[in-house]
Image 1: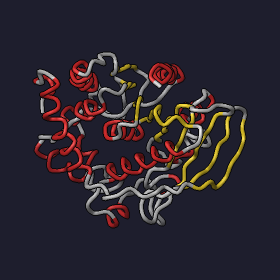
Image 2 (image 1 turned 120 degrees about the vertical axis):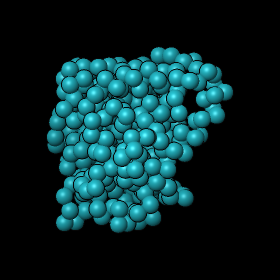
Image 3 (image 1 turned 135 degrees about the vertical axis):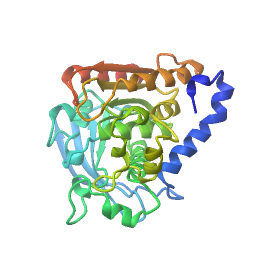
Image 4 (image 1 turned 180 degrees about the vertical axis):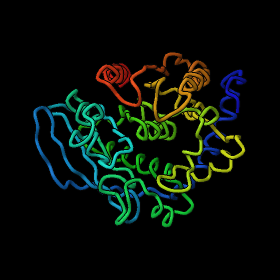
Length: 320
């Protein structure tokens, strides 16, 4: 699926669903129906300029993970941002500014700027770490969900988190964005690709192209946090059913900003992110949004600095 060979929108419409199907085949089958979230408030605290609530809601028939919800004071119809955490045992507490890197306290930061924000725990993190297992050990998950992938489950859970945001009083459901760093960056891009309600996306240190990755088996390792086990045969053959430019193309025409470290200690050959963006730009141009995707490269390593966060701020201010 060489995006460079596309001539017009007609060509894109022909292959778009095929790309989606190939990605879903790797992510695993989603449940047939979404549950009603039935959100409940567990705790509430007031701060200068916003309220922070600890909430819980259903993501399937039985499981109710917890999340932090922030609402700025005195505003109606506010835009909202879903904040995806990196691979930290703190889970949702890091974007909430309770533990971890203060530069990754996205939910707190954007609440202070006037956005409603939601920071949920991913599977295997925060309050969703399985009993007797280490954070990000997916062995228990795969026993319960043999037909799904951890990446697919995170995508499903984040789509339900968007449902929760849309139901919140005073949130403008037509203006919802997503941000994430590292693991949160993968999740932000996948969510923006598969949920059209996401109107703006920022992903930091999110990937390197499978085809250019020196260690692509990271995506289907045999133990620990196993992202997409169905990708393993493709990794061995070095023939991938999709790559990250296809994910970016599915997001179009919705605006996407990549903050990419050229000296990323976690990902090799991150220059390939620029290649992926150039490929995806073809689709943005065809959809008449040539400035809808942008990559900001830097040499700050696998992290977010205050200066990079300002780039994200500007992106959301422009598009949300």
